[in-house]
Image 1 (tube, each protein chain N blue to C red):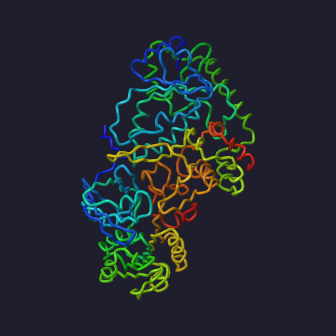
Image 2 (spheres, rainbow over the protein chains, first blue to last red):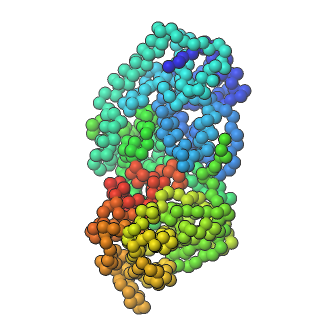
Image 3 (cartoon, chains in turn blue, cyan):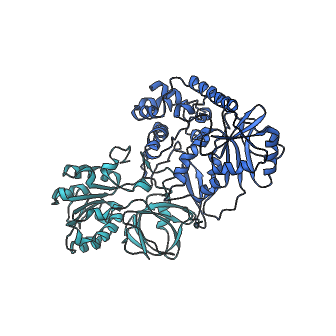
Length: 329
Length: 274
C-alpha cells in the first residue's frame, strides 16, 4: 500500500484551492452529530477526520432521494467527498453491481461515480452500534475509494487506493512519499486498536454468513416480537447505505421521477389485482433482513449490510437488529 | 465514449385502436415511434402520460415489430385510466424486459399450455411464435378457462387454432350461461382429458395466482418434472431493470431474471403464489 504525507496546513490550503473547480463535501459537526456538508472556505478547519461516522450514508450522493430521470441531466461540477467511513465505501460495491449492471447501466449513477473523487477516512475509535468487522469489513478503506485519510501527529497521511487517487495526490506538490517503517507501523497499530474495540463491542454477534442462516431459519414469532414497535416509517431503509429500492413516479410529458422507497412501507409489493405478499407488518420487517442477509448475498458478490449500525440508531421503535440476531445465535 | 442511453425514458407509441375483449378487458393496438421488437413472454412497462405505468406482456406476435398489441384488464388505478383512452393518444413504452419463453427449448416437444383469464394475453403471443415454428414441434395444446363465457378473451382464436395442424384448443368456464354448452369447471379440469407424452413435453402456465398454483400442482400430478413447467410470474414489476426492488421474489428480480421461470427455479422461493 502506497502512502503520501502532507502537513495539515498545506492540506487545508489544497482543499481551499479545489473549491474553485470542484464541489467539495466533507464531514462536519452539526446539531445531530456529524454529517456530510457542502464545504465553503470557512468550513475547512472544522472537517472531522477519522471519527465514525456521518449521520447519513454516502448513497445519496450517487442516488439522490428524488430526481427526474427523464430530463436531460445538467453537467455537474466535479466533486470531492472527504471523510467517508469504510462502511459507506464498501456499500458502494453493491450499488455498483446493481446500477452499473451490464444490461441496464444507470448513467445518472455512473456519471456521479465517475465525477467524484472519494477520499475515505480510517476510523479511530468506534461508536456504540458500529459492527463492520463482524461482517468482514475493516474500519479503514482498502478499495473502491480513491484515497483514505489518516491524521497522525499533525500530518495528513493519504493512502492511495486508485489511479484517480494517485493522479489527485500527484498534483499536490508538497505531498511526499512515506516509507518510514515506524510511521507505517503506527498506522497499523491504530487500525488494530480500532479493530480490537469492534471485536470487544460485538462479542457474540454472529458473522454475516451465520446471520444469513439465522435469518433464513427464524420462525415467525421472532419477527412478530421484534416488529411489535415498528411503525413502518422506513427510517432503517432510508438511512441504510445499501438500501436503494425506489419508486418511479409518472409526470406529464412522459417524465419519470425516481424516488427512494422502502420495503417497510405498506403496499411495497402489492400488485394491481390486490395480492400483497408483504401485507403484514411482520412480513415486511422480515423481508428487509431476508433481503440483506439471505437474498442479496445469493445474488450479488458484496455484502448487503456493512455493519454501520445506523438502522439501530434511526429506529424510533428502538428495534436493535443485533439483539435479534444474538437472541437466535 | 458510447452514447449515453437513458434506461428510464419511455418510447412514445400512438394508440390506433382499442378492442373490447370482455367487460373488463381491452386490447390496445399501438404504433411505436421506433421499431420495437420483443421476445415472446418478455414484458413492457406501458404508461399513461402523467398517470402511471404498469407491466404487461404484449399479446401480439413477436414477429411484428412496427405494431404492438397489449391486452389490459381493468384492475387498478393505471388500468382504469387506460380503459378510458381513445385512439389517437400517445402512450409510453419501456422495455422489452426480462426473460421470455425459451421457445428453442420446445423444439421436438409437445407444448401444453394452461391459461386463465387475462393470462391468455401472453399466451396468444406465444401461440403466434409457436405457430411460426410448428414444423419443429410435436403438438400444441391450449387449455383455457374464464370465469364466464362472456369473460373469455380472443374468442375467435379458439376456432382458428383448431384449424392449424398440430394445434388443439379447449375452453372451459367457471360458470356457464344459457348459451354455453361447453365444459364447466376451473381451467385445470381441462387437463383431465388431454393426451400428452409427459416425457417429451413442456407445460406453460399463465393466469391468476390461484390458477397458477393449482394448475401447477395438477401438471405435476400428470407426471411433468419441475424443470418442464414454465410459469409466467406476476409481481409488482416497477422499473423492469432489476433495481427498484418491488418485484423481488427471494433472490430473483422477477422483472430481470423472469418473468418466465421454470417451476424448478422458483419452487423454493417465498410467496411465489401471492
